[in-house]
Length: 45
Image 1 (cartoon, one colour):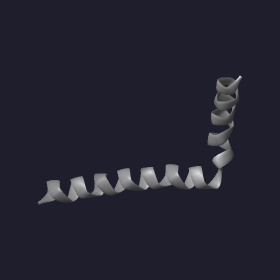
Image 2 (tube, one colour; image 1 turned 90 degrees about the horizontal axis):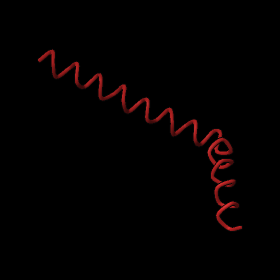
Image 3 (cartoon, one colour; image 1 turned 180 degrees about the horizontal axis):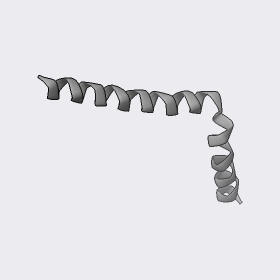
């Protein structure tokens, strides 16, 4: 019983961590777009 509760808590923490990275991506997309943009421009040249 305790093990199930613990695994549920760990799963929730992982979901929260993933959600945080998504909110960061939504809040600051430029951080992710900038390197991607550089890569794209280099590929086109």
